[in-house]
Every structure is written in C-alpha cells, then in structure tokens.
Image: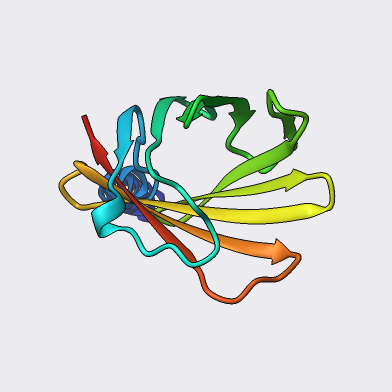
Amino acid sequence: MRNLCAAAAFLVASWLAAPALAQDKPNFTGTWQFDASKSELHNVKMASATWLIEEKDNSIHITETEGGRKLELKCSTDGKDCDASDKAKASFWYNGPLLVEMETRGDHVVRYRLKLADDGKSMRVELTHIVPALDGIDVLMFAKS
C-alpha cells in the first residue's frame, strides 16, 4: 500500500511539474523586428534588424538580417558549440526562462540572454561584451510580427 501511495504521489507531482517545466523553456519561434525606440544601446549601433527563429525540441535555427548582413545559426540548445555562417562559434542553453547564447568571433566573446514577454509578443535581448569587456549592457527589444 505504501508503494502505491508513493507511486501516486510521484505521478501527481510529475503532472504538476510538467506545466512549470514548459514555462521554463519558452518557444522563441517567429519573426522578430528590432524596435530601436524601446532599446537601450551603449556599445552596439543598430538601426534595424529582423530575426527569424525556428525552434524545435532541442535545436534552434536563427537567421539574423541586419543592414544587408545576414547571419545564420543552426545549433542545439544543450550548450554544445556550433558554427555560424560567418565563421563564428556559438552555443545555446536554457537558464530557467532565459535562452542564453555565447558567441565567439575571433578574439571577441559576446553573451546574449533572450527572454520572452509574458504575452509572447515581445522579446528582450541583453547583450554583454565579455571579451573585450565593455561597460554597459545593451538591451535590444524585438516585437513579433
């Protein structure tokens, strides 16, 4: 009887935890337009950008278009390195509701932290220059189109 009660308690706890896990890993799939009026730029100069994000189980495909420059990333979201289309290296992983990207291009390292708004219609991207270290965190705001 004890084992049956323990098994039932485990199943109930699992069912209750499943929605919480789903909320921890939001899906960023969509077309995102940069909103300069809501962004806080300190180190980055950007007038316009479009990010097309396709996310599946444990993988992400991002096509960034910015002022005629196009960058494409196809990566897993388990922290393993992958190659970007412009000879950069990147890795993605989840930290709770945040999707973190670490990108290395030559001797420059940048961290991106992506977070969806509760309504899923906007995305906040915090951009931190790790190497060389620069003062201030750039905040890029995107609206889903």
